[in-house]
Image (cartoon, rainbow, N blue to C red; front, side, top):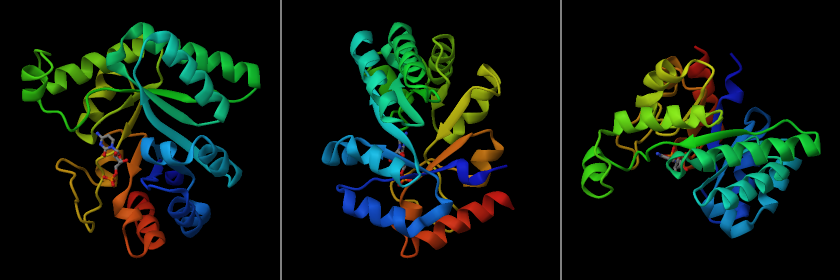
Length: 238
Ligand code: C5P
């Protein structure tokens, strides 16, 4: 198993100086970085190009959610930036997800590049079943809604979903092994938990079927980020 290609480091920084400093510290072994809305908004799309120029793959975590035409246009531009993965909210509906995948594929073919993985965000892990029912008037449990949205994402042509590591197993069972599962909410046993309430160790998440793990603070806030990152790779390998 090529573990280095499964661990995505979250560049949750307000500016590029800190982000590039970490990329330099982690060196060769760190292959994929997540760029979220904070860094993207502060630095702009050039952040993707700079990471690509350093030989890194990028997961663009902007969670598009809009009318199909607008999301399709965002998918096209994301693809032209050369990202490896980007995501949309599955709750935007099947037409929106189909358009995202369609426009992304068209752009990749036009540019002669490998098409990015397009993932659907199911239910944010910050939402509880009570909040679904009381605030959003979605009258079912988080688990049922996650499975429903994962199946909808699959039927709409997406490559997989972003979900909690606690949902990985059931999504693989419902949608098949080839359907990609990417999970944040990862904490090694030796790490502080920060604000993550429900988390799994990297080894457990992989055992449950996660294809990609997003890891932030256990590495980025560690006083020895490179040591922490390599310890995670070693633990998964063992
Ligand atoms: O620092 P930490 O490992 O908790 O970072 C996890 C990353 O994954 C952050 O960028 C966070 O925003 C993101 N994320 C998450 N939980 C979700 C969705 C995204 O922690 N449900």
